[in-house]
Length: 451
Image (tube, rainbow, N blue to C red; front, side, top):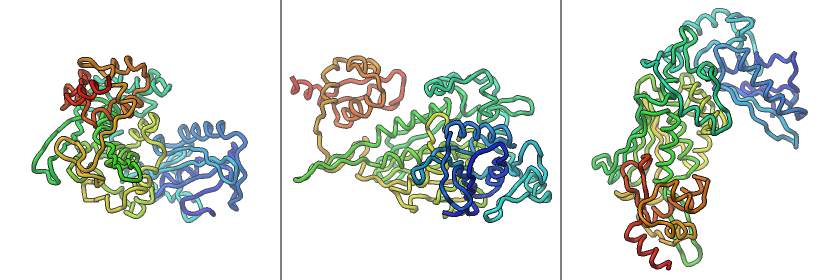
């Protein structure tokens, strides 16, 4: 593999290596790019002696030496090549061009662009033109209507990742406007209270004529709304089991990884400046995920499908990545394409819609129709055995001596609900704090059968 317009090789990280120049050039390039440390100009793999230390140095240099901020626009990961460890720096195209080295400002010594396999100084005229057309309606530049905002939820999520936020977190996460110190719209979206609501609708058929269920997830931190919606989709995305004469086949309505990536993509890349939130619609034969988003300027459909990343909301991207909701820049669309074809993506002038066909028909109640078994697992049996009246989820986990929430939901709770043994006391609000679970008549009969 040789150097290209999007690939740059560096033998090693040294103080004299002008890494910032290469990163600036890719930030200014409409496709972004990749910088590999540990590979020489001829493509020979040399490896890295101190990869962890070098990764920290790289992050620190990019964070502190480039303006506008590149946070949320780059990723630093380790890879193995020819049995040696190398560093890959993924750089997305930025929306606030021109990017430049702080030391030299918006001059030909500070601004660079990619020309073929070379990095060249940006002409002063181009610098001035880019600055004049710089995007001004980004959520990082819009002042929030409310300034009396709290961030307790965000603090909790960062503490769960063992990355506690200090008193200056609003500045470090770029949730304030430098000029004036006001909380920006990105901060508003991540605050404990906001006016953003994400709708999830379920229809009785293949059209929008008959609405069977309508839920809202919002008015809270966008992270909490995202997690609540992922939990909802986990519940909806049921496992289908087919028993044949030769084997037992299991599959889900939609591919787990693709559904998660499409959901995160809708949240992170949605254009919130239009005050429109993502929307999720479940039909008898499909799920549709719609976001207020179009192809970034200068990016073609083919480049979009190849995974070139141009984050619309770099502040959200940075937080979602910090909290493990985003794995790596540019990885979402390729993950979706591993299961679903390009035809699942529908582009319009104002929206991006992703349509995943369901593996089986879904009826009004959300149950899967078709040849589905009711085989009871040991985990479901254990859950039914401890249930008496109505129980909170934490209470059930305590009775079963379980501490891992995901394990309980996946192996105990969801299968029991899917098989009709347990029901929600507040079915219209599955994520309510007051939600409890109780045995259905079918569950009571199953429990008697177990004795």
